[in-house]
Image 1 (cartoon, rainbow, N blue to C red):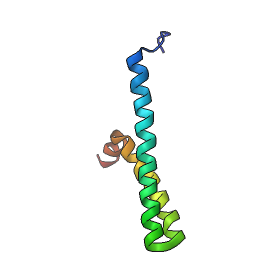
Image 2: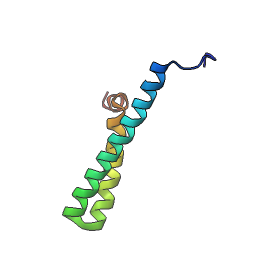
Image 3: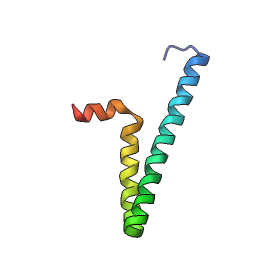
Length: 70
């Protein structure tokens, strides 16, 4: 840390990253749960919800995904 207070632009970028990550993970988890529940019942909802959580984590940070693909 430089000891300086973050600028307004840096705070906005940080807030945007937090909102982006939370929304992508929530969306992927929700889609997984809904598909799993409709097609496979409670067990499928739990399984695909966990899979959606993991996929959402990768989609929220594309650089991590590219690291695994490389």
